[in-house]
Length: 215
Image (cartoon, rainbow, N blue to C red; front, side):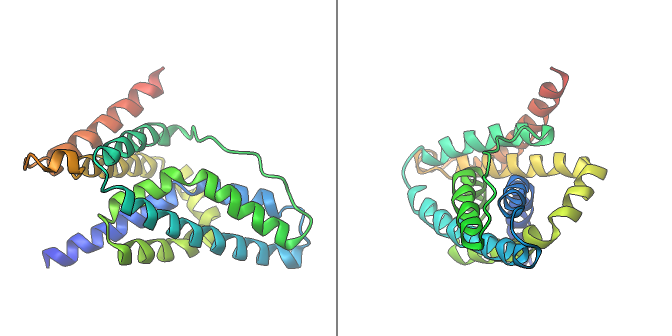
């Protein structure tokens, strides 16, 4: 049972993180497709989203292999901490996306912009999956329709219940702590770091986000 609970938690982490960090991706999809005729707009959203997810899966699988390099996980964890602290304040950088008048132009704009903007998303998912290729593909495939078709509802839900964003930031901090603890540079010392670092990183993110709010 504990194994099933652990698997369910990892899937939850991947889906929740992907939804929280994909708000800008949903916006760029809308921007890229806004000049398409109504009948082609849905196709632009669908094909662009699927292309972006496929590219993200490829990037994530590649990063999983790179994370075996000592201290690379630690560097990725620091980046995730930075993203997590800013998450409750909506301070996400967003590239301007040119609206395209034709379907394939819009699709390519979505895929390219998605690739440029998804580093934090890819790192977080790779960390939450603990190197499991099947879990990465499953988690992204599960969250893809939520991002494509449920973004409007999700954004309204997050606006109405901002504590969900804070909870997501805490989850992202937890993932960052676990990511740093499993860095090959630290695991050679055989210290039980994963749970303490995960808790510490979660609390650090929430404290940092609150401090940033007061500034």
